[in-house]
Image (tube, rainbow, N blue to C red; front, side, top):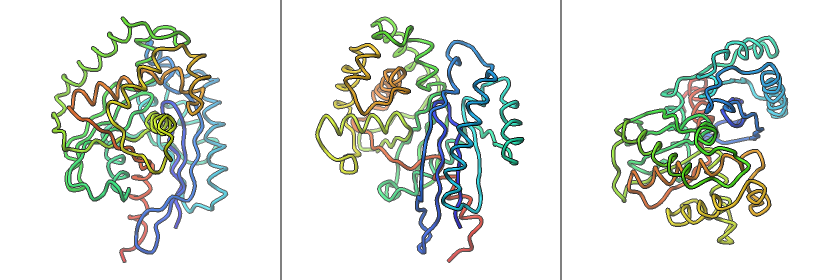
Length: 313
């Protein structure tokens, strides 16, 4: 059995087609992502999705569903996360999706999102052996945080620290180099959110695992600077992230795009905010390294569906 998971995110909309092998392990068949930037305007207090944005999102979903049908999934599931949780007219998009495709998109809660992310991470062979780890998924609208012990999330929180929202709220004109005062205001805000939510302080021997598009491109940029293969370098040091952050915030948008070829144009404007979130979190948790995993919410939801549908071995 194959399942296709379409994830309507705050910055991009993505699809994963997956199945389980004869050992019961989740295996990706195909993946694709397209920009949608649903979180645009949330940092400025704009909570209404325009008709143009709705139609554009429907076209993106249509393209991803057609892509997934090329792999003959037995079931297609559409979910939506932080951007739609905050939009006042999210129901309009949900109804439009149902009318167009014949089935609804489900808006999942922040805690459900974090639970699926934790489950997805446990399908990663490099993560599943860990007895305890902290995990984050950095999106455009929110930061999902969790502490996982023996494969079970024992602390879950969804925080308003998405890269698109924070960039719009704190960094001013995103075509310009971020002003030092704006960076400081953003750092102080992130620290305050972390302190207010009483996220337990980690020890340096505890692992931090991260997912999300921003961390994918962070890893790609560090690998490029070190001239190492992407698949061979998934542990990212605080010092390397700090060095890259300084380089990214020291240039304007045009220079950023021209100097960092691995960074997509549709993410380059909000990437400084994403890096600052990661650095502030690592400082707050007193952690020196971040392990990147490609397994995420879509993997977790696919694993749950396939486990429910398939009989145990």
